[in-house]
Length: 109
View 1 (cartoon, rainbow, N blue to C red):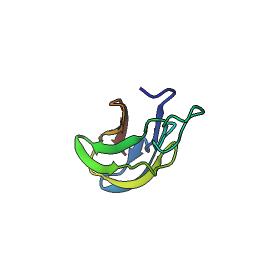
View 2 (cartoon, rainbow, N blue to C red; view 1 turned 45 degrees about the vertical axis):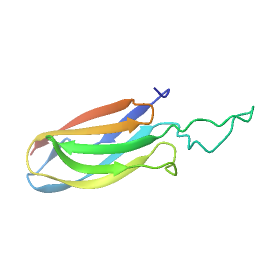
View 3 (cartoon, one colour; view 1 turned 180 degrees about the vertical axis):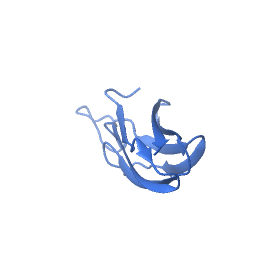
């Protein structure tokens, strides 16, 4: 498991039924492309977040595959329609098999 990994998401607390909202997500993760070498000349193993998924009440909203060129601390901003009250579940998958998850609820106003 990578050290000091911290997911953060911003979802409005309320929305009208059918409203389009903006969601922001960021995960603090020191990415390593697998191309660099350490001080002894050994290749530093690749360590990246390779997939990001956001689901609303179990239905996928966005599913992104990331490659080695992604920057440190990947940030995503996207829009989603809120048909009803529920939970957004955000999941990040790491090369080392670790899975980081965050859930945010939204109510209908």
